Amino acid sequence: MTNAINAGMPSVEIITIGDELLIGQTIDTNSAYIATILNLNGISVKQITSVSDNEEHIIYALNDAQKRANIILMTGGLGPTKDDITKKTLCKYFNTGLRFDEEAFKNITRLFTSYGREVTPLNRMQAEVPTICETIYNEFGTAPGMWFVKDEKIIVSMPGVPYEMKAMLQNIILPKIKKQFTLPHIIHKIVLTQGIGESFLADLISKWEDSLSPLQIKLAYLPSIDIVRLRLSTKGYNADELNNNVNQKIEELKQLIPQYICGLETYGEEKETLEQIIGKLLKEKQLTIATAESCTGGYLAHLITSVAGSSEYYVGSVIAYSDMIKELELNVPTQLLQEHGAVSQPVVEQMAISIRKKFNTNIGVATSGIAGPSGGTDEKPVGTVWVAVSIGNKIISDRFLFGKRRERNIQKSAQAALNILRKELI
Ligand code: AMP
Ligand code: MG
Picture (cartoon, helix red, strand yellow):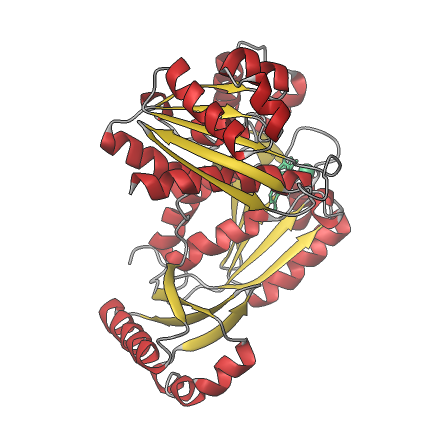
């Protein structure tokens, strides 16, 4: 440990600033991100506060957090426009003026040059920082971060733009904090249970739950529609011991309620999307794919191409929204459309086969459905969707009945198509 201003576990609070957070226009994802990263690095967050772009509120929140925390991480309010007042407020809070930071200005110039633009006076002003702060480099934006130390407390102000804040936190702020504190390990492990409500579950495992506290393991019940997550959390300096304790308790739980446990989840890890999984499978098997989309209108293509490297396996799409395009571009016979309608098994199968042949790929995927909210009939209500996958000489198709909400139906149709494909590929 070097230069420790405060050995041991730091107590951290987050303050997110912005009117948009308080009117529900923007969800405070910054806090969730910061808290996750800190936890993964052994730092517990004690409180998260969101305040508006208002001097009085910001100062009140800072004074309040200062009483409890030794690190306060703030985001937001650092834009060049008049509505963002965090920098000015920090000057008032620390009773300091502004200085011009040459390094920050170089960074602003670098960014503007890369956009092919002249630095505006408004953006030049972003290089002004409170005299007593240490400037934190912003790789992706013009607003520098600011690091203050006062009365042995660290107060850091970061931009609100999530990707700017993320880079700053990961690359500079976190390493700086780690240098100054001896951090413990925090372990969170999550057990997924299905088919039992939380109160029944609590009854069933109450003895097991009692055995957790001597090991300093905390248990949380996190119910959602069909799954109750059980999170086991513990903290300490011996990582092996912590892991062993938690793993042993999970094993005991598996013995106790095997019929209700449906999986484990890793805290802090982003889940792989279906399109990423499919991308991997297609690459592995060296297969190519094309799509023919009616009700999903290109959404399926969007999902597939949102994966980096998708050009290795994805060729293209025909958005055959009208019957005319289904006939002209995908050789769906008029008679088939008249007899069965566009939302039908024979039509969607023909679409999948045709796109595979037209684009000369190994696989063709097609969707056709009634996204709603209107257009449904008794026979084919809103939410009826046909999906087909053509692989070589094989054709797989399935009918789904989703709900009444258009956007959800489009998303679910695309997910259903990807899922059929995934099952075929494995
Ligand atoms: P600002 O630093 O206040 O100029 O914020 C710039 C943009 O970042 C805002 O328009 C929001 O879209 C976004 N933003 C600010 N605070 C947050 C937050 N806590 N969580 C997610 N996005 C945010
Ligand atoms: Mg703002």
